[in-house]
Image 1 (cartoon, rainbow, N blue to C red):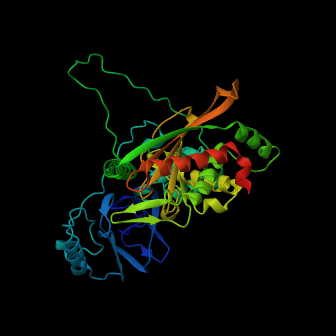
Image 2 (image 1 turned 90 degrees about the vertical axis):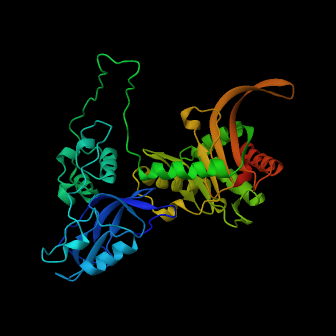
Image 3 (image 1 turned 180 degrees about the vertical axis):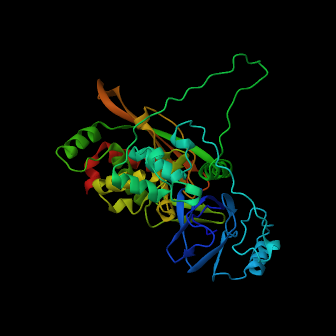
Length: 415
């Protein structure tokens, strides 16, 4: 099992595209693997025959034995036993080798793990398909009942959905899911449902718990008058092919402020602090299993339309788990925006290895006092969570003042 992301400790085999005895070549898709960040296709790096599948479905630790590829009818039992021993595995979940005459002591045959139940109750969820195929089908409006699976044991995989999209297959029926509570329930009997935790959710839980309890957080909130930004955005989007969002203003303002405040564009490394030359801003994107954070690299050097195009493209691929690991690495600062959900103010947990994360609230019309008179203005609250090991209160406050200056005078971001 290769390490497919920087935080990956194990991968979950979703299904195999090849079966024992098949000939494989470099670049052939062997299996679909769910990592902590995405469901990815595992390619073969070797040429030969698939002689053995180590785990039909389920978790495999990084560097654990996945399969054996070799010459046709090659005796691999001794090499497999040695590899399993080195990895501390007993081979209890292994599939049967190709040849019945080969040494069976290295492996114990077993049936593939049953398909996990999906709590959504939809028709598509009960069909044997990979998570990636289900997500792609939902986005494309494809009814998986009309798609023929070519994966392991008839499982529907990515290429099957792509073929269905190219042929114009669409969903023709929807299902209504209802839940009926038990007729009588004792107060001592809890009614609940359990959902299997995905690799992504496990990693989010672990990393954010580590961040919250290892990095001493403190919080700074400032209110920004976005009235000029509202007016400028309307003007810039008039008859424009690419329409920028308020989030693009915020990404650009933070990027320029980070260049002026390098202490904020830093990270903690035990006995040293690392000040980053590049400004790489992570933008939190909500997906089904939690959050992914694609990274806009060198955001200080990009215009708002370019930032907008990259955010839209990366966010779109994040929602169907098509981001590559390198597109979610290297962040030096993170922005989490819940303003579109009407949230006025919140705090966020720092996204390692960053020293800070900015939580952005909604833009609201409010009365303000200016020069002794009451005016209606578009106001927005932002709260920055800071790692006190790296950023002090005054440093964080000065950074937020610079962000405020850029957003209240957007023309300065054009210089």
